[in-house]
Length: 489
RNA sequence: GGCGGCAUAGCCAAGUGGUAAGGCAGCGGUCUGCAAAACCGUUAUUCUCCGGUUCAAAUCCGGAUGCCGCCUCCA
Image (tube, rainbow, N blue to C red; front, side):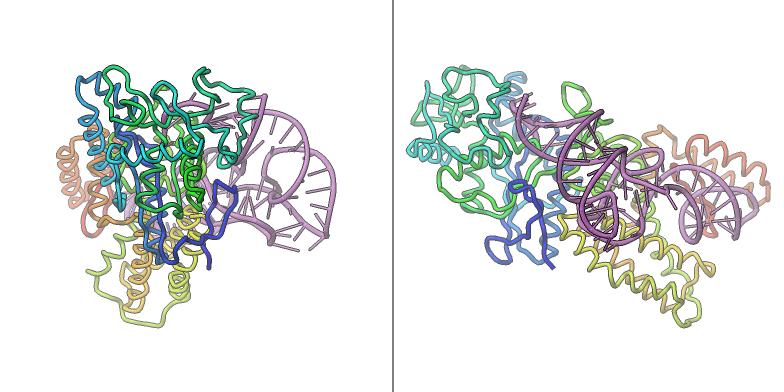
């Protein structure tokens, strides 16, 4: 079985062969630390988190680098607006970012370098490019000369002639070509600066990734990832810088995740439809958000809406209620043992096949949506077997169910799902939903208490009245031999 | 203007040559004092449209239409 990955560079699925057997070096472009992270950052983080988890599951040792851009126009603007330093701003938002990532259950990368820690190395790389004739100095700025790098455009499938035809770029007389980009910018009044051979200044955006990836992963590493918007110009420019300097391929495989749209529109600050991770996690359990992302392929666009998240919530609820159902059986007296029913054997077989199907789907360019389909097959079969015979199961069936539960959890672990104890999951969900609706939990439970009394007196009229009353507030009651529980619809 | 992507049921979505996964929603049934959950059945004779290749096409090729992204900071 071979892992195949869609490579943006070739626009094809390719068999994954790492530079060094058994090891994967991976670089994913991180955030510019000037504001809270949004749902788009969350998707990118989840996508690459699942890829890393899967590569590890597959037996690879993964070294992941995710950088922080901590010097940049937007950070400077924010620091000036708040009358503070770029360091204060970037540290604040790096901390916020880390909290969001922890909340989303993203495994921490091996390295999280910051651009400002690599200024001397950036200067050295720029000097190399100048010496090779790939860059030029103008008034303390240093620009990359795209025309001097013949394969410029190979990642994004563009060429300089076509692009300049309908160019919408600022014409800058100091540049030889409109697509030349800044490697080093002379500092203006009130901007942070570092000493350099070209005077006081600061690095351009693209150079940091070329430097940090080379320092931490070497000249050529396996996977370079990021959002699809980074293909051009950012990743194109990284290739121009790195490959221009050392003549070796920068990364073997380029992976780009699709965008999140909000009600079919692009999420952007100008449209005012940006949802921060912090806001979303007040509304939905992190695993619901993760499940929502994994339902689609990582390269396709995903439409984020209250409706789609509610559907994801329903899906997660289905899985967790099945896990809870198995847990509950442990305290139920077993039924007398007997030979396994055909359905039971069928489940055992499905469970046995799950790892292979999981691997096959994930090997096919990380097809998480298909994996979820397999998980639901198992869930349905478990439910079918547990629902029978008054909740009692035979010891033999219990073994099968336990194996099924383990298989679900193991698969879930690689996807970053089912980390929660089912009981806890439902409690958290209930509290979160009640808070969203502004419901008074104590009042609800008082009514439920009254209904329990009414039911013991067989006062069905009053009992139903309470049910209806609560249902109007989207509170759904569930009666069982163990008592009455509730959830939000 | 240049480059690229997408189009599968009411909605989301997998499927890249062998006869349409899965989820959500709906309907009918079983269960239940009534419900909920769960299960069973049901919901696309068909994959935007037109042509072509093939024994065979949602899948490959050509064309049309529609939507979207990138080309400017952007996950």
